[in-house]
Amino acid sequence: MKNLNNLPSFDKTIQPPWLMEFTQRLILLNQPVMQDFRAWHFRPGMRFQEKEQWWQPGSSRPTPHEGVDFCCFEDKVGGLVYLRPECRIPALFKGRVTALFDDFLGRSLYIVHKDNGHQQSGIIYAHIQPTPEITVDRVVQAGEVVGVTAAQRRPGPLRPHLHLSMCHAAESVPPPRDWQAVLRLPIELINPLSR
Ligand SMILES: [Zn+2]
Picture 1 (cartoon, rainbow, N blue to C red):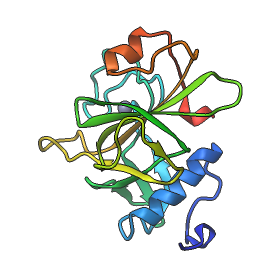
Picture 2: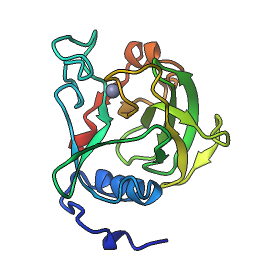
Picture 3: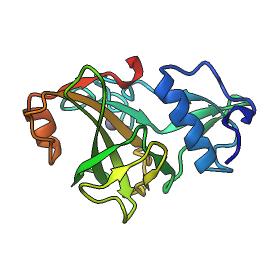
Picture 4: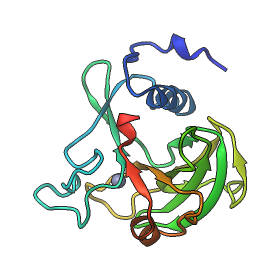
């Protein structure tokens, strides 16, 4: 494997730490498309709890955004580059797959991992096409490819992207099996970019 630190023109100040590692893995997994990555670009509506529909300026989401959308980045000459369909997505941490369910662009994957201080920590990887090996109860390693960004369903501004949600819950709370459950169960959604 290439040395992660040898990536040229890469913004080494990306925070939080998980995002730095995730971005490095993403760049290596998606060469040459991400070769010139410099920094993530977030339009209004792409960050946690924002209300805008970034793909439809002027309109609002039915509920505040439950996570963060990774859709495009700035390259080293200041251009905006969009993730392509079938962008390979690595797991952030080691964990166990507890559910796979449909969302409005593809499939969502719920992975529970250990996080000291919290009984149940889960991450939802949404709008992806999971790889066939990713099935319920499978233990995935950090960095393992869990899927690819789902293809765009129709032409337009709602481009392929990865939605990430981070969840905390008591151990007695069943892992959610669909998006309604994410919002209905006593699950605390936290801001991924503040971790
Ligand atoms: Zn989203």
